[in-house]
Length: 251
Image (cartoon, rainbow, N blue to C red; front, side):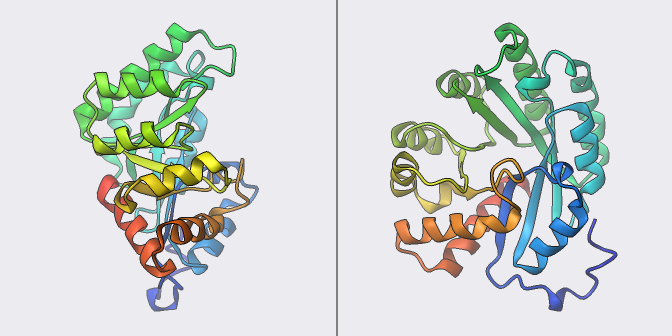
């Protein structure tokens, strides 16, 4: 996506090694400009997530495999209408190194989608991810306990819990299983307790932009929060978080 405009990597302001583990570039009016601005602002890794067939295919097109990567899948909102796309995931992932995982997938009980449909689509995608040995990006709204149990029950080895909504004890339990906890750009006392409880090796940061953050650059404020709570310099915090992202997604 950015190769045509960024050819001299010495010009990139990536000294802090920032990363946005979850955003939706397809939802921006001009995703190319958003990604370019983030890259020149120091966000060296952007993972754009699908959730429907259309948004997943868009994510694949936007990814360049250098700085912008895609995760694709069917989220709970689209579980009823786009379930057929799940069968296409293996072929797309195998043929595109730019696609580094399956997501966002999970459960969402804040909407009126039948539970059995949601669970069925979620479990199918979990099994595909396991067979391909790629991570899943987990969505959970008003269903964190059930989602966590399903992920554990299926023996998932690689997962990031997007926009984590659980408490510090659940976060610690999931981290003990090797999963990463993603912190969004919204502060709360519970989220601060989660950050405090976890090792930085279990933390990643996201913007969920444009739904929550304005752009991938908003990871800066999340890294600042983690840095403050953990008592680790900003540069080190950003680099260690980005290392977590690269390790999980084999980037």
